Image (tube, rainbow, N blue to C red):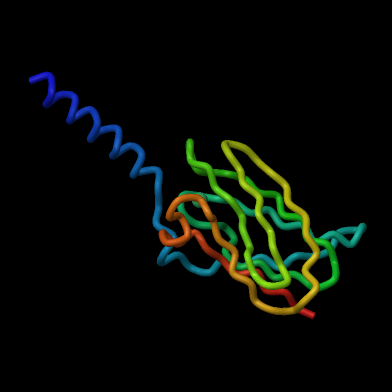
Length: 133
Ligand SMILES: [Cu+2]
C-alpha cells in the first residue's frame, strides 16, 4: 500500500518535470540579427529553455565583439552555450540565472552552438551562429 502511493507520487513528480520540458527537435528557426551598439558591440539576448535556444539562429559580423546575454529559463536545469569549432571556442554555463559571454569571431562561417549538459543537444538544444564578413 505504502509502496504504491510512493510510486504514484514519484510518477506525479516526473510528470511535473516532463511538462516543463519541451523537445527542441522540431522547433522553427527563430533568427536574431545583431546590430552593433555605440561601442561596436553586437549584443543579443538568448533564452535557454529545456531543451531549445531562442533564438536558435544568430547572425553577427566578423571582427567585432559579440556579447550574448544568456537567460536560463529551464526550471532547476542547468544549461550552457557552447561552441567547439576550430577557430571559435565559447563555453558559458548558466544555472538558475543569467550570464554574459563575450567573444570576437574572426572567420566568416556557420558555427553550431549547443548545450553540453547531459543529452540536451540530442534533445534539440542546438543552434547556428552565422558569422558574416
Ligand atoms: Cu541544456
